[in-house]
Image (tube, rainbow over all chains, first blue to last red):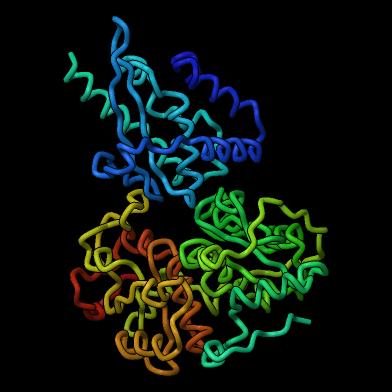
Length: 152
Length: 307
């Protein structure tokens, strides 16, 4: 798999990871965990609007919303919640947020399911921990697909 | 050569008080410069591979259970050569007092301590309450990563026999006490994996016949510290029915939660022969021709246990 199939922002993130040594990749993931935006108050006050991704080893909740685009397909906004004591999970969420937030259903659904493997973290993070990120991506795609059907 | 042992009322009741230190003790030792001469090394060992980097006890080094302690291609722990290199890189000599702490009430810290014990490292202690208690008390944290001077650590052959049980050992052990430390749902067989850990599943749900169910977390208080000796006795001697002198095997899913229980039985209650079955349910629940029991009852020793 190459990064060609990926949306621009995500492809850039993958390139960044691939250009680094393994310890530096972990450091970059840590930066993504710090960069994960806080939930807006309307979601923070209503945790029931978020879904838990149980495949993650630490609690991770997410939801999506659609935003009208001028003329074109609606853009999808992504929202994640993970505790600070789960930096790996937060880091994965941060990567997906920066890479996919604001894209259309078509763009998000085109992301290959095994995209997380492109980050080159499997050895350092362990395959077990990588499943969480794959599950997060899968959940986002399922939710986007369902929402896109509603809009169609 | 080891660092002075902490004296306090709670620890004094335990069989081996020298195996625990409190957050107060560690903070005072660090303030007194204990980390400067290599006599005392503090190790953080967490489930989350990045947690140490978000902030840790000043001077603490990191050991990752998976990438540092597990062999990459065999389901086993590292060998003497690799362990010596790891310890040396962390500034640990054979005489160093090692204090280990971590997240989740010291799950992974206890696991790391157990692996240190496989190599016979003499003075290795747990920080009672672990990372969460240290943080809850508002104690110092830093993101500075220490770069210890490389120490001299001998290549010691791992000695598994006294504290590690393999599947064959457990089959031979059937009839003697077993402690299953997983959640009640895993014990009964309702779940084949731990809540939130579906990738570590097994083909069959249940427990090793005759095992008593004492979920690991019951040995820990709200603040993550170990419960008092009296409380632990009520749990393991009372509820589980262990008797003094028993030969005990503890297990969970991959051996990390049961390290926490192993520590309590071995060092806090003083059972001489306690082994951790690290193959645990991911092996037993998937193994061909081994018996299991389902439901809340402990079950009985099968007439013919497969070999």
